Length: 200
Figure (cartoon, rainbow, N blue to C red):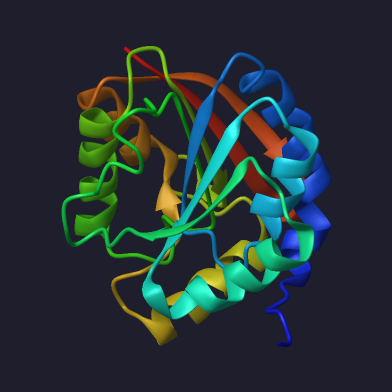
């Protein structure tokens, strides 16, 4: 099959890996929310062999993710499970505690009520002291960090009025309310950020 391909994933994977290598150095089981094409999962799985990487997405994306997994054949990257933010998350493996979470380019795609559900689920599914990495664009003090982000926000809202680039202040309030403390806010390529949280 022709595997799905995202140029953005290709462009940002090394910069993200540089941070994940440190953040997940003692992590054993990472749950990825919204694995998309599967490119990040196989790249990070190859370079972080000490951990198990659990992919997840809506069923419509499973075939593409499996295409990447079939080609790379990594023992530490798991087949995608279905996680729908409208519903309660399933536990990927009852014998394997989730002590890390990664998601890229999701919070601006989904509606705000689903962003709330996302953080509530983290509180319910992750172990204490788990590390959480969230990649994507954010606004600061209600302002876009670049003209390209402002244009991207217009495109997002034309596509779905309930989506859009989120204010970092609102994200931090929500994170704190669900037991997450911001550890680091990393500047990334193409006017994105990588937020690192630790669960209490």
